[in-house]
Length: 126
Image (cartoon, rainbow, N blue to C red; front, top):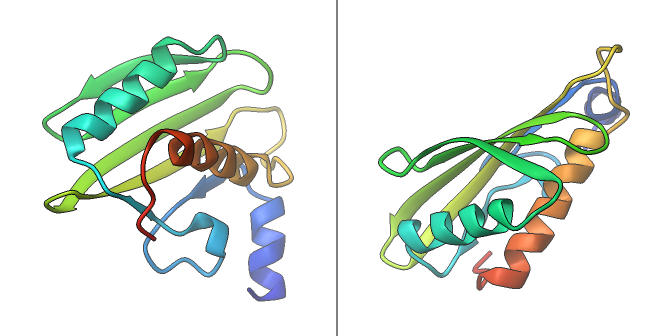
């Protein structure tokens, strides 16, 4: 990861994952599950959490909109895509809401924490 990319990471209020991201922590994770099961796991995690609140859920599109209501305010979009039978990709898009237009890498840290939680619930392929 270049110096410019590292500075962008810390002086931005948005982070998202993708397949071929320069930052290994922000690469898409693939799990051995179906789309419906992954959505159910994520939905249950959010419903049982004191920190997060679900805005909307679209099972047909595989997207969940979430707000972090405690601590630093975040808006999170979770995308669940079934690539092959029993191979499902989960991506996150996180935007922090603050007075400043940067969050010093907090949105990236939250993606890592969300992936850690998914790793506890689902079997990681990549």
